[in-house]
Image (cartoon, helix red, strand yellow):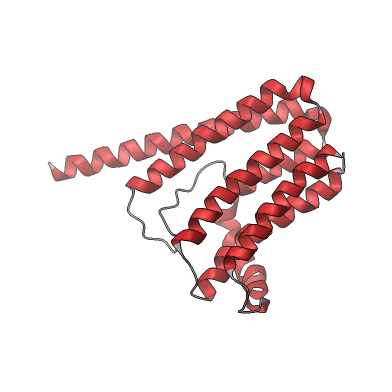
Length: 202
């Protein structure tokens, strides 16, 4: 949700300018791969308790994830392969970060981490299902439903969990609750809109 409101500003004044400085010879998928590697690096840095380095790696991963799509569209290099790699890469990064947070204290964090992973699984499933069955009128490769908890909000929670480990349990349960709420809202909005369409067609 935050990205929906901030994206026009950040894209115009930051990411478009960065994308224009990238050499044309670089393929957008390379940027996607760098985003994935930065996310994986976050887990390793957390394991070695390099909290601030992990925070920088995560912010870099998120920034590259935004940049790859903008660069692909500017260069006319958008592709189904790129979209698929982006979606898979997002999940790899999210798992890596959550796993890294788990490694900081496996004994006390096992249950909240499992719930976090479960909530993400349910939420991304709802996102993909709605995207499959909804007509796409956006610049993206498929319909993108704006939700309460998206990537920007997730990264904020992850960073707070890194910087304030004493608040991990509260943050983790809050995160899971909001992610599940996002999935529920998305499903009922989808069901309601489909009911209206079916009623009009009858």
